[in-house]
Length: 261
Ligand code: GLU
Image 1 (cartoon, helix red, strand yellow):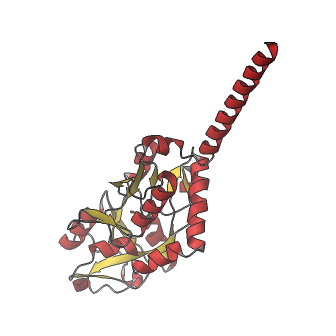
Image 2 (cartoon, rainbow, N blue to C red):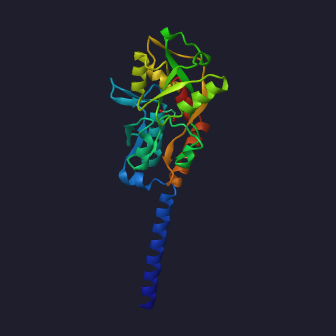
Image 3 (tube, rainbow, N blue to C red):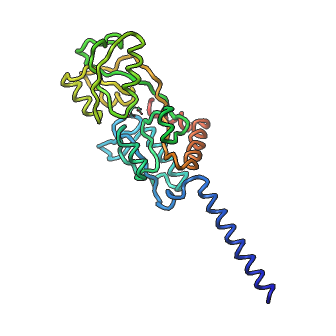
């Protein structure tokens, strides 16, 4: 009888140890909350061709960042369809990650030393550069033409610092007008309120039309990383491992080619 009790006690103890080991293993990838929810919530751009673009004729998101999100959903939830896309801007993406509405951001989010203090970033999956969109009729053809000109930039973006540093380096002084969204900057360019719309070239592509041109000058490399909460280091490491794997095995390079980036 005593032996039977001892056996039961040992079995129960073993069960608890195994269960907590399993839980630890699940937590090791930081994906427990996503698995519980059964869906991966990802902040993406809706207006960046080839990266994150909402196609109004198919009602679907498309681009490199969309495909990366689907690949991550396949790894975490065994189904590339279990992903919910949420359109974000440079201004809204950080707060949406902070308040837990989103699990990650894959939205032309440039990795900077300053931002690394607030968020976790994966290894870059793509590196862009800051550029300039001007009206063809402006006669502006390079950065050196911009002395005293008004530059439209987005709040919370890296653009202002990048173009200002590049201009200062060649003795050019700029003026700035800051906006919360890109459509507002494009409207300001069209109305003549600003002379230049400056942000990453990939983003400018979404606003290019027959009246405007993206200048060849570019500055300040913009490495894009998958962004996750600073508190979930396990998730960041897990995502980074996958991004590195997909860079190495050709998966991401093939997508970059597929979207002509
Ligand atoms: N990529 C730049 C940034 O992260 C431009 C802003 C944006 O991504 O919308 O600041």
